[in-house]
Image (cartoon, rainbow, N blue to C red):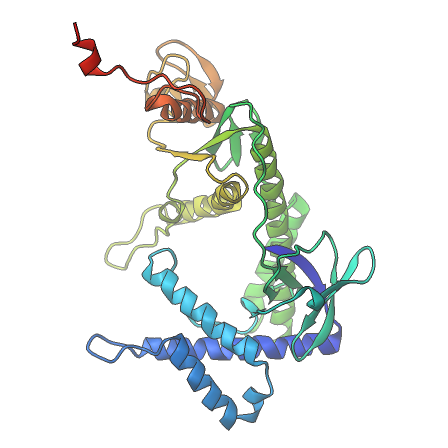
Length: 398
């Protein structure tokens, strides 16, 4: 996705909110239909049947007919894709959408005539039933655009994202392998010794966030004051998210340009960030500490960093089993939990090797990836001459 900041006028913003409301209404109807399904009943309607039902509903209700058929049909298409992802066990089951959360809609059959540039930093996109809406031209719009999605975040900001497959970052061709160890105190430690941390809110911003959260706890539900406080909190959270995304984009591009093979630990982030609340009969242990650890993992951007690396350097990412990578000495390969005395210090109890604990783990990840790359044939990781294993039949010829 190539995302740009949308700048609608007040009248256009109201029209965009109507589109969002129609998409949310159609989505929730589809969720309700599938919620009624039980074993033994007739299967819930698919995308084609739901489109026929939508046509009948538009003929009966004028307020629905006044909206864009593209917006409403694409909401059904998005739901069908969400259900396919659920049955494919890659995503959770689609649930209800609330007003103000996850607002947006998708437009298809887009041509280059629907996007135009007005000046150096201003462009326009044609939205059905709305007209030409301006957006900030921060970079060139891809020529192969066939669809786009308009979204509104909790902070009230509008964005337009054009769907296009970007070209991957070319490999430098040096054959160099880098290991990346992800952590909470240090977001990404490289085997080269570099320590990279995702930026978050500053101290003053964290203090303001704490004050706003206390103010929110005292505000009456449904009041205008509570809505204003929630909007202020959303703006701070959006600022933190933007900084983390910017760091991920810059870091992933830099790694894809500098190294031919990028090795990362194969971490199960969803399992690692599960809540420790438990049940009434079997309550969890250290619930508050686990919640803090979960927030730290998610704030470090572990999953997004690897996802963007896979997008920018396809075929050059190796996922390594993380077992004992933080307890193994990179110098002598001795494994002992006592070698990691502190979070940032690794001191081998066997050979006395001393290094930053995260960098030592990153070097182990790098060496494991390099060993995997040459294990089968003995050649370099990106091709070239291969040292084939000896043939037993040839050795016995005598």
